Image (cartoon, rainbow, N blue to C red; front, side):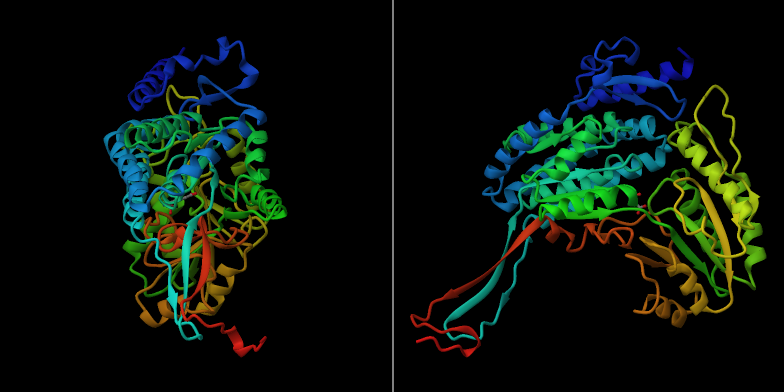
Length: 514
Ligand code: UN1
């Protein structure tokens, strides 16, 4: 055992036990007699294996879904504000254990401390929003065309909400769904990424504690730790009216049609290939700093990561030079160290995908200005890379492809129309931004024939959205909206009601059937 492994093991163990996870139930993978029935928790920081986590099979998954359904039957008749009290308690526990959960995010995903804490803060924020929402699940009343009639709509809970989440936001994405689904009166069954079982155990322990303390029904929060077969049970179960899935477009292409086949609903948050435009009037100080965070933060492993920069040709050389300096000076290394800005990639496969993409970019006429190389970090065996800045002659095939690693392709433009056309002509549609101080230009960018994404910013990078807005994107990003605004409606069913208090029969549209 290396020194780093011992430290990671201690960090994870400490955080897990403070979060209330039974650490003794975890095994060491090498000594686990039921190894095939385990998920392996590992850390990208040094590539080491930490624990074996007991995985469940498809039948056990069905039982979890069934238990959640039973809990839902009680929960749906619990008043909204009482449901809010559960999420309020969850938010308090998250605040109390912010540091513990952030430790697990760092251990399992390799996020730097500030980003790991930020991810847990995102959970606390969504709990706040959901608690307020628990008293505001408004329906509308419309004027009826008939005298002595009332026309109105009411929102009711849906049932068991299935959540499938990815490794890169292992706790925040679950909480966006869980907090909202719970105040809406649903149960939640979660299939986390196989790469992040420890954070999933930590979150579930906190929610279970909040459930017990507030007297909410047991079984409201199900966890499916297992391989894709348990996820498939969630996708195919008629007990699950909504499946909210975050991950690759390839995954969404499987999940969407399967859920639709049984007339379930899906909420898809899939790949992004996000672009930002830098206009001649841009404040370059604001632009450069925002671009570096959006492109290199989280080691390029956010769905909102900036992957394409579209720069006006008059300032392109200057922007590239400044970015090149910034990329070259990024501190890459152990995410537990305070000064580190870029931690490891999640695994070797990501590193290989990055190298393949860079080779393709060069073949397609690109020039790597800086970065792309593996960075050795003393004492650690993980996959660390310097984020790459690549000038491209045009929007070639590799630029149109999402590679989940820190590569920023630079393209140039001459007119705003050209820039918008370049930005929009990719299959994905998650987030986008423009850096400009020309208000007319910003407005044109935001107009109906401007940017075609779900999240479109001005003088703000493509990543790091607040929870108050609806989160999600168009085209191959899947069209779903999670988190704030009125995204809650996706977690409820709408009932339209006409009440006749006139004592007479009146048919709508003036139909006479007497
Ligand atoms: C994701 O990468 O799946 O806007 C979610 C952001 C974060 C959420 C990212 N608030 O970058």
